[in-house]
Image (cartoon, rainbow, N blue to C red; front, side, top):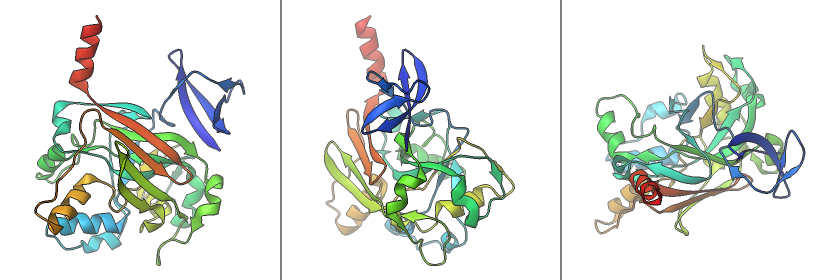
Length: 295
């Protein structure tokens, strides 16, 4: 199933997508006029992992650092702002966010039932569904604050995007593949791409996850309850952000032209089986000026 949350007449409602048509879960009637929200617009928490070795290794290499050995010891994650969740549509950013504003191409899961001290071998049964995640990042803010060895915080807390819908695991069965050697849990052969203003800038695959979601769940639930509605991101796929792409480009050529997101950019993320998540970056000051003009 593909599960959605949509808004109509300022009311949030839940629906299901059948043949590209939304049906309301309560009335079973088709919905024709609506605003699509994040599939879980008010998650109980939002964590983001660090599961793709390629991204970690490339980002460190571009900073002149060797691959960190602790990556293979346990999956890590951080908590981001679960009250700053966006779905498809405009993303409002403040002036400081545009200091090296970046996308991050990821997959995310939503927890479907409460659990604690969950073993990786059992963890996939706790996943309600999968969705696309764009972990937007203000890199200048992020790098400044992490000099103090704490964070990320302000570089990440303004917007995390998920959508367009939540896909239940049964729909992904045809794409199932083995996890990396030495790892436990389901994995899927899902092509992941990101376009900015119609130009593809990133391409990867969920099958390249080193740490599985099952293993991330085991780590996250150790001595801690997970709840229905918790969102957990995979972390960035290899080549899945401008930070990595710019660093690799400059490493290969000093004449490489770096790129960051700017006001008006359209970001489209597509993942096999999960759909397409489209957002437009909007300068918040601009939106306020437009409102004032209308008054």
